[in-house]
Length: 119
Image (cartoon, rainbow, N blue to C red; front, side, top):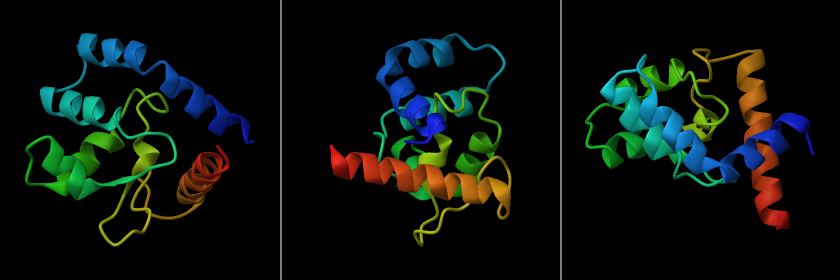
């Protein structure tokens, strides 16, 4: 398994530690905090759309969720790579819509899906 993906899945096992870090952070907005905390509930190997994540926190804007994720200071502990577009495409990653970062997101999602399938 790719080292970074193993790291990501392992880090999700320490979700409560990450949750405490997000709760204690003073350099994020309350909206960002809501987004990051909700995203911690998306299991390794699964995805959620920007719109669904927005709905879960009571927000009408998938774009606002995307902007919060673009600024995610907790990645990969808060797994923003698990958020995809409504049409199933990967959407953005680290503020990019194409290129190396999108390929990295695709690889991370594929590896997590494979890992989930194999377990």
